[in-house]
Length: 82
Image (cartoon, rainbow, N blue to C red; front, side, top):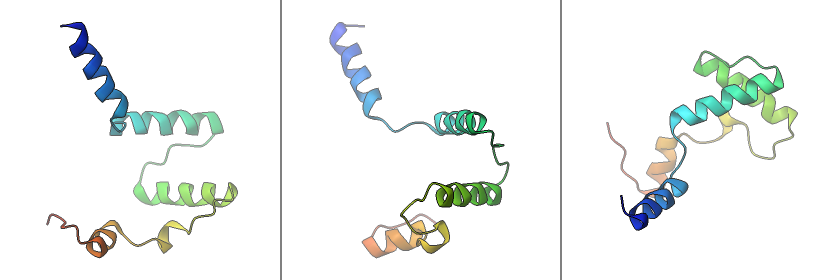
């Protein structure tokens, strides 16, 4: 591969969002560091997230107070798949 092509690929990779696998690995590492168990369900994850947000003094509203993604997209006029 030419040097310019490798540089372009590396630049694109640096701007991309993390993969789901990377996010899970990061969450697992942070849970381990904090002595937390990685939740096995969505409900469990929501409970841990909410508790940690409150403990950290997070200024944002609780997750249950935030409109869902579909409602947000509809408000902005973005079509959702069904």
